[in-house]
Amino acid sequence: MCVMMSVKFWWLIIRNFVICGIAAGIHGVMAYFASPKEEKDLHQKVNSDVHFKLNNVQFLSAAVMLLLSLCWTAGILLRRTPNMVLSAAFWILAIWSILVLTYLTELGIVATVNEFNDDKKYYLRGIVLFIRCPQLTLTTMVLWVVTGLLIAKQPVIGVLVMPGLLMAVVSSMYKKLEKQQLLPN
Image (cartoon, rainbow, N blue to C red; front, top):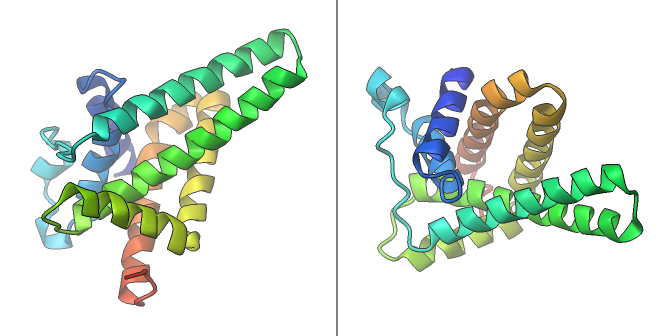
């Protein structure tokens, strides 16, 4: 299942022109994992018509892709010419990339699970979840770091397993926290 959802994740990113696609990829996979068991079917597994309908979510996707590409560029330059300024730039960009990816992941689950009548409420709920639910936030951050490391060191596992596994773990953890009433109001 994780492999199928990882393929769906990458397909949605490519289908949404890579730069604006990461939010759609996250939301598309979260829509499957966060749905009740009776609604999960083969059509939903491979359905790629899932759209993240929040305003300005493409801006967040573009910001993540910009941060990731700058981080990647700084890492390549750092390997060729070790420099303290490049090292600092790399770590700052890496930290911001992970933070924004984590927020986008939590926003994806909020948009899937909750029903609000205003887009601002989704963004605010994502921020509240990001700040007031540290176990979910830290788990998501660690999983994104592991995904990035595996993409760099073991690309097959990093690309074909980790995105689906990451979304499954985050969705499962969110459901458990919700069941135990540990999510912030």
